[in-house]
Length: 491
Image (tube, rainbow, N blue to C red):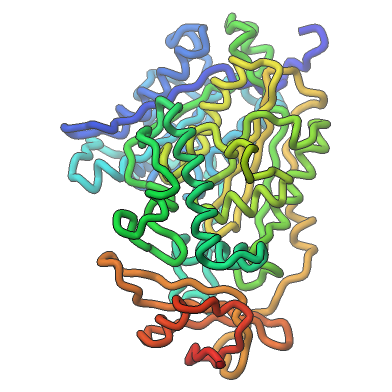
């Protein structure tokens, strides 16, 4: 400890639990507290001893369990007495929001020991198996709530029936395909190969929801993998129908030493970073790029003195294939074989996509990998909404070069040009990207177009005309002239 800053934040324990074969009811308080107890035991300091040292409990937003103060509920389950409780708005970035908040508290000397956790049980809810007992919904709230509750969609996007992630990420995917110069069939095969490699990693992850493995042929097979929104089939999107919980324990270096936590259990948080891209998709300059991820990567690598090739273990947020491709491009990560798939868990389709808490599983898995490989470094990224919110962390069992810092690069992103959105536009435009949504019976029912005008503005449109939808699926419309709002393709 002679040269190490005593306020250096260090991950010292992690726990993950899942109920894949549950036949009875599932209690989220039991699920999340089980993960927390496993994380405390994993520290090597004893569950009860370290429990009494917890000063902060942070819990990611949970769709299926929303007490007024989830951190306090978890603390009560454990018998802990934290001074502070923290929760988040719904977001894929929630675990890294909690981590950055706790690390800053530790660096500032406000907190010595923190427990961060999250859970989701949408599968149990779907099957009528959930029983959370008495949930305090109108009691005192947490010390603070992290994240923005700003509405994610521009009115012009909603008017084109673009309302959910499953509507937007296919738009990014088709834009990526056009930028890569691939035709539809080649790109479908490329996506299937990439996602099969994620599935292969999940077969080695004992905490993954689906460890069976899925081949590229199965992912591309229309007979057993229905289309959800072109070009995405069911096995290329996040699987929220899981029952999973995870937790990590975070201490200052001084507190970890004081608690007698073995040094081989320490994984240092070298730095975190966060930023949003232009909030509305319609305002972004290009739909296959992310200036925010690029700025985050530059800040983190600069802080740690690393290159991306120095980082052996990577878990890139993988709600959809386009999210992985965009982040990999901006961070300089190669996706083509023989380079490994950028995941340590298997990703949100196969390891599981438990709502806002997936990245807590990334952190837990990276903690395990980096303890076993103490000379290596790890990277986890997170994304919220429609490639809107971004965060990242670099971890290693090696002591950090610089004192921990959180890099907010929002001002850098905000300074970049933004496109205007043309609402209620009538006239000729050029198709920038598109998707077709399908109903649950497998029939295409809505075509969505994103178009550029001659003056650089962006317009959105939708069609339910069967002939127009068929034309979108039969030909690649990107770059074609189109008449709005009818969505009639020229030629």
